[in-house]
Length: 176
Image 1 (cartoon, rainbow, N blue to C red):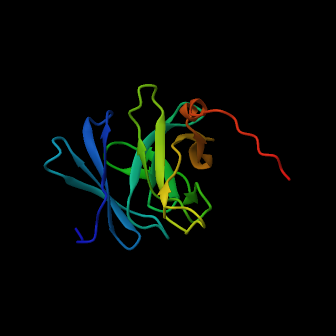
Image 2 (cartoon, helix red, strand yellow):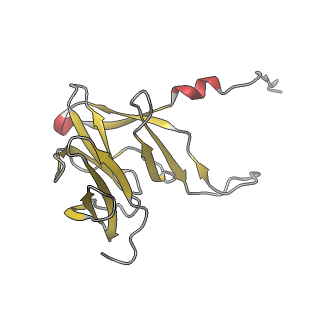
Image 3 (cartoon, rainbow, N blue to C red):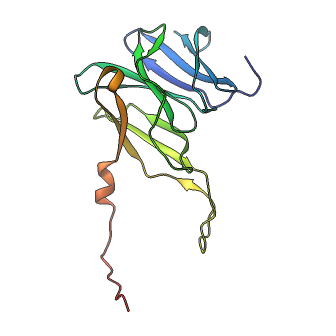
């Protein structure tokens, strides 16, 4: 292991009955490790995500045909969709990006929502905003889902439905 790795992502894989860790190594390299007890870890494989560094995420989603897929992503918005058998992740797609802007970084997911949704929040790392008393922020939470199947699967996002309940009184401003 390299000294600069950080922000591992650990998820439970129900199919293999093991914990799986996605870990950044160096350059564009990551690895997957597995454990039955969260103490002893076995190396499963290395994964390369060109142009993507640190803060990995690894999570399952169901595609439009109802097939279980896994998504492996890095700190930018680069990701792969593929199959995971508990020992090896096999990418079925080319590297894609779910966000084209510069302010989406180090996104992480929560896959254990009671209704089965996969929720993501990212760090909006860039920019100074004039007149604002802050620098940087977290994104709104979004629900992730897959469009398409197999090698045509693409990661999609939509704001979580709970945001529709977060509103107050309406204020109209006269445009003079």
